Image (tube, rainbow, N blue to C red; front, side):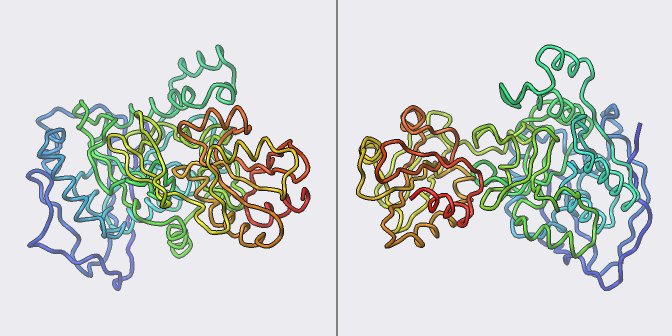
Length: 464
């Protein structure tokens, strides 16, 4: 069984840690959370930590540093974590990582997926504290990801603690539904067997875990990820919902800033990134993203935007149309979503060059057999991250087409309009772009997922 350890290494004495603030140090329960001394040289101490999936020790032998974790489900504990999350909201990832490792010692581990979350391991190394890393090997990863695992182990002098799916469960799934059933009935069942259940086993040996979730990874579902929280879904060592703490040190960091950090620190990265891959998962369910696409569009591309999560971070997903949300326009470019816990969602594609079509307007446009001018219309949902990702290119396209004799419009096709859009306008997933020719009643659906201005313009020029 693999053990994670770190070898001794030092950073230059000029490296400065965030200064301590002894008079204003947050606490988790009765445990004081300390920071490293200002200006101290960093020595990564050698440690031999128990594996992630080890049996939990007896209650009377727990480390004092983590003793308060047994009460993490209490209301007081959750309030403490909410206060700490507020205190750390403007903190750097290094400060947050140091706080997490100092608080939970060997009872916390970094979840490493083999993508840009290698930044978490670099931050952990820079704290000078012992740290553990685990990863889920689904059996369907890209060869490049396995090579990155090996490079990371050698670069940091550690052993990643791999978790594997249950062989009997995988065998039953493949024998009954085949190797690629997720293309037909969705990826959730496969992810549950190969990812969620192995993760659940891993976390049962911990009191806290560290993830690479960022708010900008999926604006529609991850926009409210805090830097630290009580895990709302998974259980920790002591059992029961509320027994596990989840740290997200890079929650407030932009993707391009993560990459600037990785290049500066010269750490190993997945070679798939240089081939257009951004968000990397299993090989059959991951592909490069195209210009104008959001990074999550490279995952489970055959499914709706709302389905593009595997279940590992289910507790952080912001609800959109679910839970009976009633969505309506208020006439000033803002969409109100009225439901429990669902916030106001601003409308998109707001430009004088883009015509906002009503249900009656789009119906009339579709019925015309001889239009005065051709139209290009996007069927969208403002909460959809892929619609958000193409907003800039679509508005720029509308500006370019001004005065050309062509109209550019938008039609909000979610909520009550979704069934109509599917039936009458060939809506598949958001966004769907349709060209209405000048002298033909038959609309033409844009076939490509390239949503940059030049690709859209080429489509328009080929048809008008």
